[in-house]
Amino acid sequence: TRATLTGSFARDINEAYISRTPRLSFGLSRPILDRLSASASYSLSFQFFETMTRAYAERQVTEQVLNASELPTGGGEVTGVRLLLETFEQRIELDLRDNPFNPTEGFRAALSTTEAGAYTVGQFAFIKPALELEGYFKFLLLTQWITALRMDVGTIFNIPGGRPGVPP
View (tube, one colour):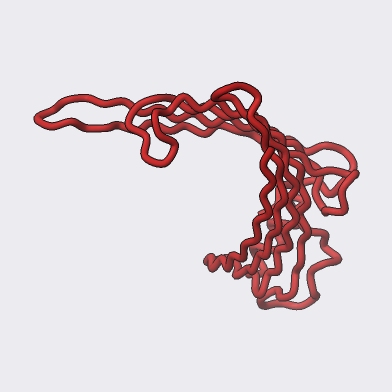
C-alpha cells in the first residue's frame, strides 16, 4: 500500500476571469494483481476569482454554478468570488506497458469515478465517471518509430444534495 500527499497551486488567466486555485490531495493505492492496481483519493480545492467579467459571471449564474447573491450589484468586473470543491475519487488501473517511465509498447487502461456531494463540505454535487486508454506500438519506416495513442472519455452528472452545475 502506498500513500500520497500532494499540494499544488495554479493561477489561471483567461479572457473571462483570473483565478487562483490552491489544492490539497491525499490518496492510497494498492496493487491487486501483478499489473492491476486500485486507488482512492480525497481532494480539496478553493477557487478564488480575482476578477471575472460581468457577462461570464451572469452566465455562471444562469448555469447555476454561482448564486446571484454572490455577485456584487452594479456594473463592471466582479471580484472576490470564492468556490470550494471537495471530491472523492476511486480508480482501478491495468498497466501492461513495457516501461511506465518510457514505454515503447503495451497498453494502459484506467477507470475512475469522482464524486462530490452533500456528504462533503464542498459547494457542488456531481458524479464524474471517466475512462482513460493508452496504447504504444513500434513500427518501422526507414527507422524504428514508436507511436502513442491516448484517449480520455468521461462525463459529469449533477446529483441532488448540493449546488447544481459544474465548477468552472
